[in-house]
Image 1 (cartoon, helix red, strand yellow):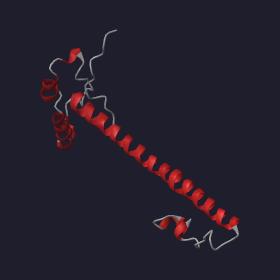
Image 2 (cartoon, helix red, strand yellow):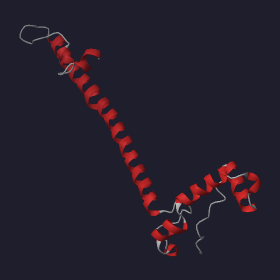
Image 3 (cartoon, rainbow, N blue to C red):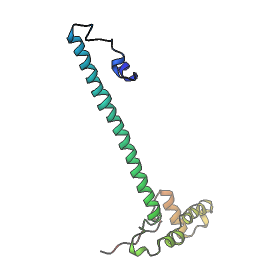
Image 4 (cartoon, helix red, strand yellow):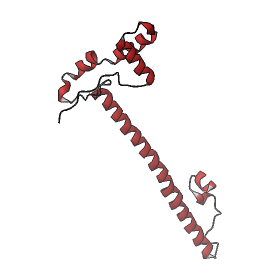
Length: 147
């Protein structure tokens, strides 16, 4: 197997040359041919195609995941997770730019981080406590859909 995978023509390049014309023992000649074909079918066709199939499948999973992530970036609000195609969302671009601008929430974090905690209002104190606990409860929620 070691030499058979490295040679360009397969394992036949590494085996001794046997000729039907000069070797009257046909079992050795037939055995060599059968061994070469079995090696070619098992190693080159089946096992290498399995490896290539796994690699292609993995890349297709990555592509599908990146398409879903890109779809979420363009069609969902990062803050409230409302969908662009929700009829209650109204003007979605205006919603993302003015009502739920992502950088406004980053500014809130840095504002609270560098502000003296003794000067916090009750709302600021609550938000800072939620941020320190790793909770997202301080962010607005998407409107509930009525059934």
